[in-house]
Image (cartoon, rainbow, N blue to C red; front, side):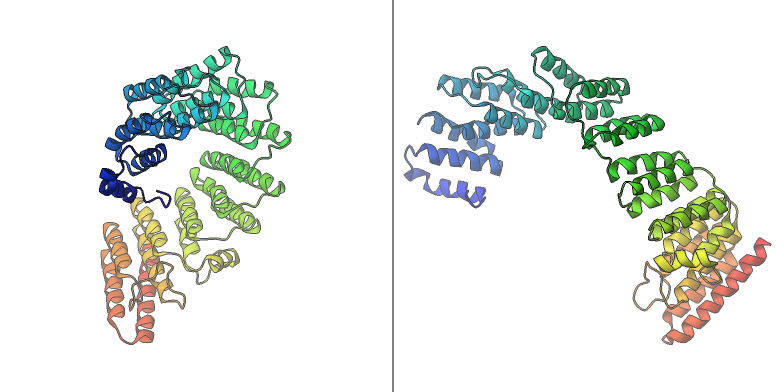
Length: 456
């Protein structure tokens, strides 16, 4: 058991039990612990009785029996064990009782933790804030917010002062139950309690406001947070607000929140920077404004990735600016801003071209879908292969090519797309890589020319 080989310890017992006799409290205590850890619950009560026959079980034995009953959701069994311990004159201290309650809640059995709290005979010291916090958290995790609030009322009725943890649990519970009015009162009580508010308190309360659409109210709480010593907002706090504004399509507010974050000395990661860009497709945004936002994000340290390119494609599709989407993905001839973007993240992944082609096909823009297919093949023919690299010995992944072919067929561009796919297959079979690359690029340019003619 010392080396956490619990099953081996129990197996050793099975081989030697005939020579143990009555054993000792240390032996039965160790075996009880091993049985609980190994999940061999049929042994637990046997070992416990042998332990009781030699004297009073320790607080560790009490904890192990509580865990045994909690894992089996056995309230009646727990009551019998507590009665047996009381019969033997056993008592446990507050720390042991609270740890046992936590074990019940961690096992998803807060009802058993309530049994422990109600047992004055086993722990005469009574309840404290830790016990109530443990119970409230257990019921909250079990999806019982009403009971959590009842326990808070009971806590106050017993003149037990709430702690910082109490208010944190209550705010989380309010968010989970969608009770924003109650959360507002809890936060008000917290501010009036004299306790020190921390970053988690503020962020949790703001999360509830954001979830109910009260984004501006959450931003006002952020202002209060900035004035509270020791409760500085962190990246999580700002990310939540950036995402909320971005989801609403408020590019200006999302960018403003990002820049406020950076003024606080917090370094924005790629996730947050891409969130701001995402505001451009939550609502249709003119391409010029999209590029303006992109420029500012690049200046703020955005390292473009395929995620960035995918967001840009979504934004241009939302604005029906298919030519801009194509220009972003097709590196040759790109203007300085686009070269800056593609130079940072490398060649686009095949899935981004497919994303544009699919969107164009749905919008009835078959020629754009074909142009996206041609751009994907031409990118693969460049010195830098696609990020989602083709299988060995393939210039272009035939799976990706076949997918683009299917999209283009559905969009009314079957002939040109079929010819391009045939060229892909032939190039992949060729042993002359340089020649195959040149021929494939020519086929892609021919398909692009066909697409351009169809778009005019």
